[in-house]
Structures are given as C-alpha cells and as structure tokens.
Length: 65
Image (cartoon, rainbow, N blue to C red; front, side, top):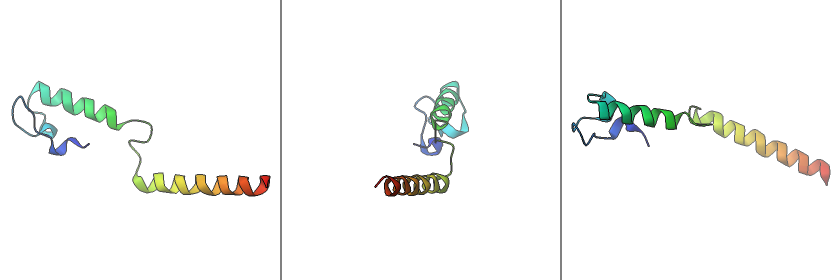
C-alpha cells in the first residue's frame, strides 16, 4: 500500500505531508515496510529476474533428462 493516499486520523491531513508526529511515524513505518527484500526494485527488474530464473530451471531440467 502506498501512503500517498492515506489520511491521518489525528490531523486529517495526507500522511505523506507529515504534518503531525502521528503522520511522520506512520510514514516512516510504511517506508521501512517498503524496503523489504524486493520492495525497492523496479517491477521490470523483478520480471526480468523471474524470466532468467525460469530459463535457468528449464535448462537444468533439460540437462537432467
């Protein structure tokens, strides 16, 4: 979930503006969640990695058989 559309229950302002301490804490928590293993990667890079992985598995299966 992106925080650019969330509204703070404390100050009724968008969370991405960080007007109050609650907004800033929520924004920081969401930012940390976004920085997971593949969170900061471009979706095209993830698709390319998936294609390479599928090709490598197919080549390995072909050599084993």
